Image (cartoon, rainbow, N blue to C red; front, top):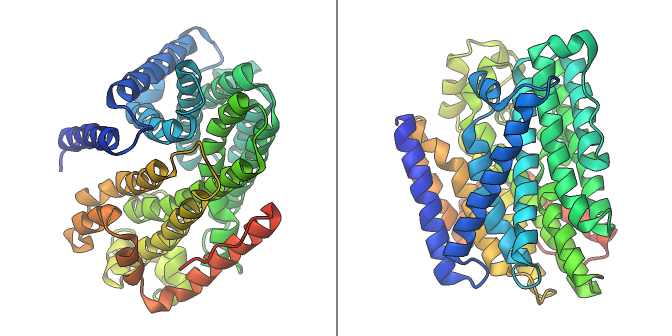
Length: 427
C-alpha cells in the first residue's frame, strides 16, 4: 500500500472516529474537538519555528530531512491526545485549559518520538543514556542542559537539544497553568519510571539477547515501563486537579485506576508496535519483544538470532511468534480495559465509556501498519478485533500464553496494594 493511500486512510479513520464519538459520547463534540486539534497543532508548529533562531538546535526542516521528525507524530499525537483529554476534562475545565493539556501531551510525545529515533540510529549506549537524563530534567524541572561549545556544532547534538525544548514546552504548559501540584508530582514520578525503563532497554540493546535474565517476564515488569502512557495521561490529571482544587477520595481512586489502565494499554501498544516493526528493528539491531517472546516460549533458539536478517522475520512469522506477541499485547490491553470498567464505580466527572472506546482506537491506530505487511498475518482481521467484543478477544488467546496472564494479575495486585485500591480480577 502506498504512503499516500495510508495517509488518506489514516485521515479518514480520524474523521470517522470523531464523528462516531460525537454521536455516542457527551464528552466529544465533533466541531469543538476538531478545532481544538487544529489549534494544538498550530501552537506546536509555531513553537517549532522557534528552533530556527536557536543556534543550539536543529530546526524542524532539518529534523524532517533526517527523518527524525515526521509530521504525523504531532498530528496524530494531537488527535489521540484530544480523544483522551476531553473525556477527563470536559465537565470541569475551560476550553483554553483543555487545549493546553492537548498541546502539552502532543509536544512531549513528539519529543519522545524524535529522541527515540536519535537513540535508535545515531547514539551509542552512553550518549543515549545521557540524552534520556537530559530529557527527564527538561520535562520535570524545566531546565534544559544544552550540549554547548564545540559539541554544539554536531548536528546530532543539535537534534538532541531540539527534543529537550519539546519536553520543556510541555513542562511550561503544565506548570504555568497548574503549578507543581500533587498531580504534577505523580507526573514527575511517572517520568522517572519511564526514563528508568528507557535506560534498561539500552542495557538490553547493549547486551543484545545474551543477557542471562532476558525473558519476557522481566521485559514486562521493568523494560516495558519505557512506555509513556502514565505520564501522558498524568498531564490531563494536572488540569483535572486544577479545577477540582482538591480531588475527592473516590475520584482519586478513579484517577489512579485510569492511570494504571493507560499504563497497561500503552504497554500493550509496545508489543503491537514490535510486531509491526520487527523487520526494521532486526535490520537496525534494536531489541524487539517478539524475539524475546520467541526465546521465552522456546520457539526459537539463541543461535537463531544470528541468522540472516531477511530470513529471521519469515521464520518468526512461520512459527507464529509474531501472532503470539499480538496475543500478549491483547492480554495487557484487556487488563487495561478492565481497570477502566472498574474506575466507572468511583467517578462522577470522567467519561469512562469514552476512554474505553479510546482504548479501542489506540489499539487499532497502531495496528493499522499490519495492513502493509505480509497477508499471512491477516492484518485486517486483527485490526478489526479492536472493535470486537472484549470477551471474544480474550477467548482467542492460546492457553500456552497463560503464564503471562498470571503475570499481569500479579502486576495489578501489586499496584492495587500500593494504591490501596480494591483488587481487580483480570480475566
